[in-house]
Amino acid sequence: MINLQKGQKIDLTKTNPGLTKIMIGLGWDPISNGGGGGGFLKSLFGGGGGSNADIDCDASVFMLDTNQKLTKKHNLVYFGNKKSPCGSIQHMGDNLTGQGDGDDEQIHVDLSRIPADVDRLVFVVNIYQCVQRKQHFGMIQNAYIRAVNSGNGQEVCKFNLSEGYDGKTALILGEVYRHNGEWKFAATGEATNDTGLESLSRRYL
Image 1 (cartoon, rainbow, N blue to C red):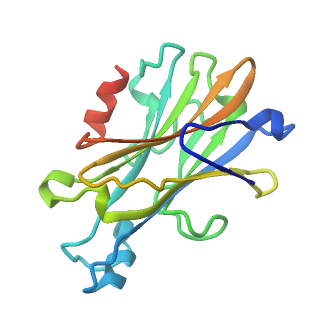
Image 2: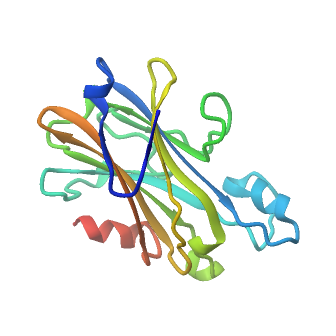
């Protein structure tokens, strides 16, 4: 397994011959505020009580063309559209059991089924209703994105985001993209002030 730094890239298919299916795991923890921190953690993705401190983070995937554009509405895979029509992307929602137990959300990718007009997959996380709840990623720690070989369950690479993201409300974590017939992974780690998925989408229109 390779630990990546911000801006680093790895050739997924060249370093893993025969690789066709990967699982992208995304995780994060809330920073304990000292009062009811356990409930704060357990409440991620609806897994606990209704504390005002709950932070609902949502992971999504933009399927972009060669011009880095989102040309079809269904090429945005998120909690409201969990499977791409081509069947290459499957968002597992609140999946906290089985393989990758530490992941908060998991997205399965079948590289062999990605349409020819899709060149890049961009993985993002935003905070649901961040403005109304006055929440930001300065309240989150231990954020990461990792790629797992679905064929053997081995972790291929992992990128731990170590920067401070105080005041930021969305993260562009990483990308899987085609290059000279191979699939590569890039550790992006870019924080933005986008307040939701609609705002993030405008970057790719």
